[in-house]
Length: 120
Image (cartoon, rainbow, N blue to C red; front, side, top):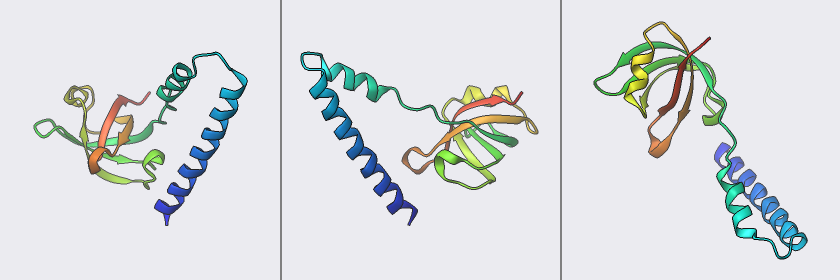
């Protein structure tokens, strides 16, 4: 059901964006429309950082276990889970028990921490 809702929302957003682009094209005749569209597409909204606590660090396998709050960008509830890390150097900046802020993604079905920093 959530997947269907996401598809419908994405379709609606795409439709609105298409009409907005058409209106823009009609009002800016003679300008470089492709460059403007390309620039807008590359400016993605930043992902909100989640909060968690380091439970385990596995440098050999490039993994970290985090007890975390809700991951809004992945529509996940709070829980404790293991993540891959995009940069193994991140694991050297934290220790078990540290409170952290992080961004997680799900590329190719592998939950991965893409940003990690000690909480202040």
